Image: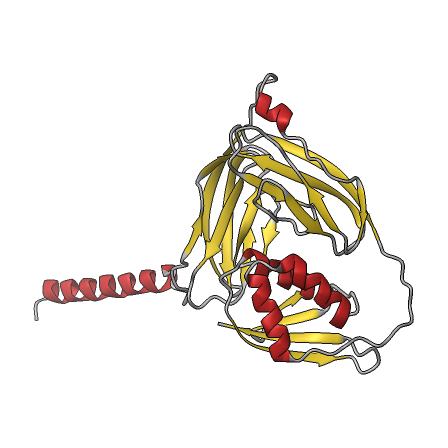
Length: 291
């Protein structure tokens, strides 16, 4: 074989090996699927909320980072940007697979003579006790959309013109109401105190897993106010931090879990198991299987 043919063959082999090595070491394939998620808008005004949602089939753990220091470990939810700017939203599922998107948040400019801004006043009490059903009202003319945040859950809680809420923990909270026409905002402060502990009385009743599952399903149908606080008092000894394990590997407390059921009303529950503290007869752990 002529020398020049040998050189040509060697060169071809070296090029093929080089291409293989480059592909091998520059490959971005980490075993992660394409994430299937959505952000409700790519541009909003400061003070507006976005809705985020992940529908990746293999995901069972979520971390949302919104670029301004805010995070969420929920699969779906709402988030509000307070300041204008360009932010990068990062979703990480199962602790390793990530994707990013950007959102532009503009300045909220409301003129001083804006009647909508002046009308967003919240009528409600300035104090209450844990467990009280508190009513808040608003009469903004021309508004067709309302977003109430009661300061306890960190997200939008109600979406009607006049809303009621029951606090589960004492503290000082700022209630925020936003209406649609000019993105105007009203604020109201409330001080929540604990109810006195009278002690004594009969030991708490017990509830079975299937019975608690039925109560959870009522919450997904809009009966949060009627069901949660009754459950908390009767079976959880008013401990809103009682552990809830979801699908074997995701932890929450009973307050956050019931709040998410109220917000994510398409949740399907297939099984509920309860464990009791032998000393207090109160529920100490709830294990939930969701579809």
